[in-house]
Image 1: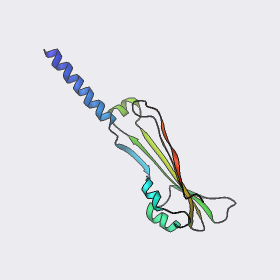
Image 2: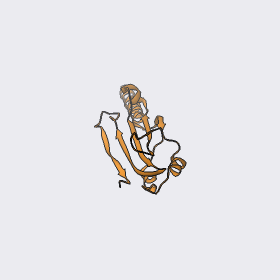
Image 3: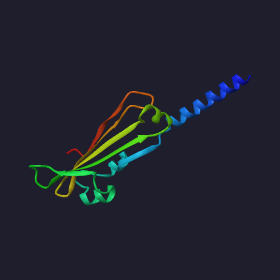
Image 4: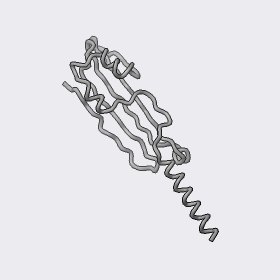
Length: 138
């Protein structure tokens, strides 16, 4: 009877440890995550650079568009990794990355879109990729 109790306890501990490993809790998050609802609040040819920065903060990076006067690209990038016992044992957790682009001409946002992807899951599931949302295309 003791062997059965020990086996049940071992199975219970393994199941509990597995559930902890599957829990998705951010270990590290870089940048700002911009949700769909936030993107819906922004309007091409209406939202100004000042409003964009007031809402989202400074971009992760930006660059002028060579050969196009008074135009620049703002990039807001983010990444997040999951943690847990299994993530540590398997080498990595799920990781989500996103980059949201804003084209700004003469201080006004003219176009914007978000590219998002999700790497391999904890259990080696297929890589999911969202096709990137485009908004405000003129």
